[in-house]
Image (cartoon, rainbow over all chains, first blue to last red; front, side):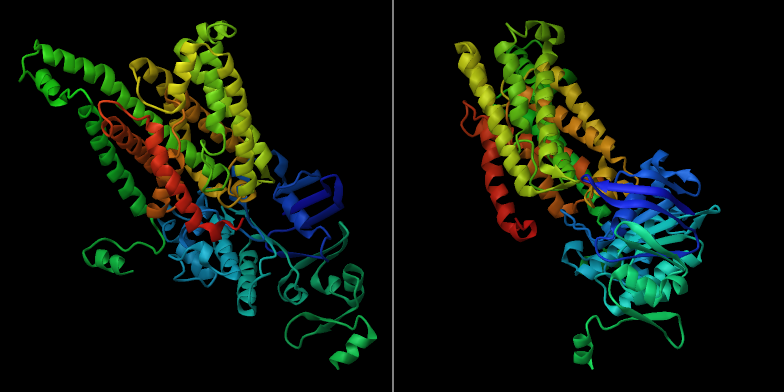
Length: 269
Length: 365
């Protein structure tokens, strides 16, 4: 369980997050949604201790401020929005960096094959020998996810859950890989780990999230199960644009942009 | 792919694609052998024609040990060539590893102690001692003895590296242009102070300064080895613990921290190691340029950028490279000799330009 209590973050003297309190339990995929500049990524960065903050963030009851980078690295892995590398590493070498902390939760003899298994999970089998810098943005993002998966390969080790923090994990992926990556994240949560993902796509959020936290101007304006947060009224408050939520025949809700202006709607019609 | 298949067919186990650790191990092994050969070459060649073989023969009892020529040869080899060889190994590996550490710290393949002013800072520290050591700073020099010069050079290098890091790095990202320009500015500043000191130096000091400033292993002796050796060895030993952190740092500071690297402590140790190795090298041999950029870059082309192999391989190749340059500098205009800094620059300058042309797109200035 990740518990955030009265979190406040200021970057360069400007307050980005204010009085944010929330909980994200293990075993669930918690999505953070909100418009640009609402503080989603800042919240994730504070969780990763990249930004100084006031308030308290604890991971299964332990204050993260008092933990060493090594202790934290065993319990959570972080997928950044993008990563470029100054040196010509191969894909496999990048993925194997996930093993820096050295405790993915697998047997020692398993470590050698782990990078390739992680690559298979993000649909990059056979990419190990390619140079990272020569891949497309979407492929690079999946390589990074494979690296992150290596770090916390087992979602639960000796009864202790581990966490994945994903900052816009599918932003540059095609639809097939969006679904595939969200599947990987969901499976991690279903196996007892915790996932916190910053997401822009409300339909993916509806499809995969177990809980949603909606931010607006640095404050939590709604939180709870998808049915509770993904409503016309809440979404209009959060995103400042009229949105209509429908129910897909098989599975969950979906969100359609509703007409912002009367003219726009008639053009579409 | 084909070579993998051939290796597999002769019974070498298949390696996962993209895993270059076997190249790294092979390179370290081959370079260790190369270094031994270069060390042998360094001890056996020189202007005097002293024969190391005769000396070994004397030790083993094949050549009479009271021969006058042998005594002279043994003096040449034990007191001139041996310390010079040892100093070459220390300085070559120190400079190559300093370059590698800076490139990892700045996440930038063009970082090098000589290019970004660290050597100028070390030189300033050393010049302060050379010029003022007998007068204003006499207590300091008498307290530290032979270590006064390397200690001052270390302090100079440390100050410059720290300033450079503060100026050129924002939020864990270093802009290449900013780093190089800041290096030029800081180097110029250090140069100005050095110039000022040169102005007040006496004629004798001036001769020392000129000779030393060109970068040379000439004048190597066991005292210089004793002064610089322990410092460089400490820096190399510290660097051995930085390999995994340097790999993680290539993903950026934040990600390195997420991977469990204590980033602040890591950066401090890296800067200290760079300043120590560069400072000690500059103190005893002046400014020998380009070793720190040529050696790691060449190795990266062959074995890839994994620092677990790149660090030992750079130390070995740096030492070998410097010994070979030194052998060249001693023989090319024999019986005179070129300052070794000229030889390394003659290799390094064009090489640096080649990197720029070859990888211009990758840098995206």
